Image (cartoon, rainbow, N blue to C red):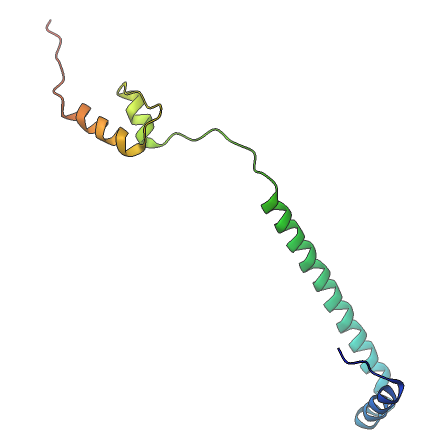
Length: 107
């Protein structure tokens, strides 16, 4: 950023005085101060929000037990062992079990 010297500040002040007049200068300064304050407040809030988001990404999530899928639940109901098998493998076994004719117990 370019450094602004004393002579540049005096020139800027003189132009502002000519444009807005001495009576409007305090009102202009107040509104600019309020704007700067609001900007800094919003900047701090966004930085805080970003830090919280970054923290949530870096923190390891608590490991939760894997939820059983509908396929796994169905396979268990049919008495099929589900350990170490994918859902696709379980679907094949469920289909085979469904194709088998049920044995009817004789009275």
